[in-house]
Length: 104
Image (cartoon, rainbow, N blue to C red; front, top):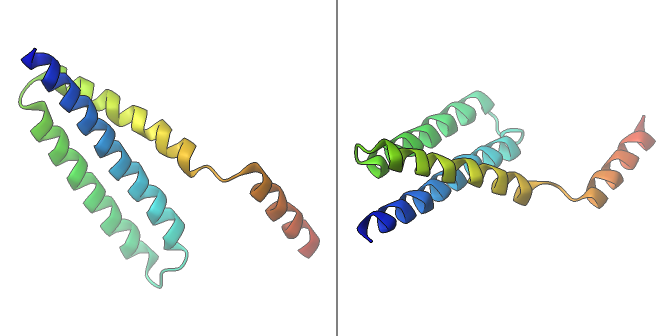
């Protein structure tokens, strides 16, 4: 029973780490075009996201490669979730393409 709890916590932590990492990446890419110093924005975002992720993997694994693997599975699944959640609407893409073609 205790091992099932550890596996569940590791998977949930992997999901959370993935959401933080890939959500932060999406937020950075979205806002870097507005920044006056985009290189600093990208570097700091990468450093913060990578630090949180690596520390999270380290503490969640507790020396167990099984927990690390389950945490990684949650991380990868969160990647697909963030991609699906942040994907722009088809209607919005079509209207942007039409507006861009009128200007050319």
